[in-house]
Length: 214
Image (cartoon, rainbow, N blue to C red; front, side, top):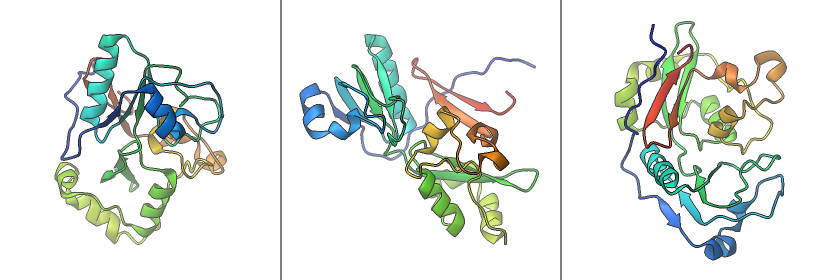
């Protein structure tokens, strides 16, 4: 079996253009909340703030920053206490507007996995699962198929997000990146254990899709 994972083109959708604020003074004055997280670490500064709406916009910004030799700091819910979302310079890339649930898949063991954008919060995912209100768009359903969604909606069991990191406003993408844990971790384990697959944007502008075991 090959251990090489090929790159692919980033996904794009019918979304607004990325919002770009490219003046450090304007960022500091009007978007100061993006320059800090719960660590209160500083001082902080960014030459450009980018609020992306989809994977293709993220890939474009990463490739441009790499070509220009600029640092990139990724911003999510900014709930971290180690300063990971605090920029020192360069591009501050916010994923908060990437907040859709994209699909649901029934696994062989009877469990379900959900495919989400990185900006979906822990609280939002929990609420949607409990109410079974995933609100998956038609375009996304064409990829994952409606059968698994129907099975999920008709399943009489209750569902929840097992890792349940302590901070409700944390974003799922960041909890995956940091292998976050919380009150239920003793029984269910940290986030990594529950990740079925990830899509990663590269600084080349491409994307790799990696499933568990690859």
